[in-house]
Image (cartoon, rainbow, N blue to C red; front, side, top):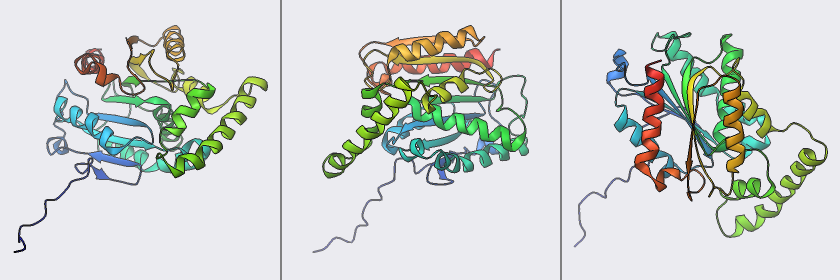
Length: 290
């Protein structure tokens, strides 16, 4: 006899977020609609995910933020491989995020020029570095104002060009099997081209341009930042992150460096979850009491 019981509904990992577009989603708790975010919590958490990140993995960070800061709004910006190849596609992808940010300023929820930070930025890998660079740049073009003062956490970034690092990062988002066989030579050709331009012709390239943007105090207004990285990362050389942190400090940024031993790319939270989230909350705590 057939059962009349309804099939269980399987929710998607990011079902609790409102989808503004394929690459931009946001979360608004009921409390924050009345501007009730607590003084100890960020009003907005901006999460810039790594390239081709799966929703299942992103959702774990979103859920933890919802637990840590239940009154905070969350804005998620995704990044995929074609955003590297076509800059215009990346700029198009972040437009809904700019619209959302402008709506928060226009409504008075966020201040255009806060004396204290209201935003916590969490950047993952070079994908997040790229999307936030374009986000900050386009926000300034549209509003005439630099992106508001904020605190930041950089996870596994920024990294500069290395042949195998670039290859490993690009191939990671390609499903195993037929498509990986197809895409592997394409990615190798792209990396060879980049190697020639970077190493032989010394041309400026997107990773360097994006990394430099985040170290420009005229374009990136931050109270403080934390770098979370590790020597086990096969996609981003820890020395690149370390160098970026030292350059940031030299330019007046307040920097915290946290090295994780053995953990891999954007997987440091799995190595020591307690330590990871303590770094995040302490980074925001320092900013909130600036």
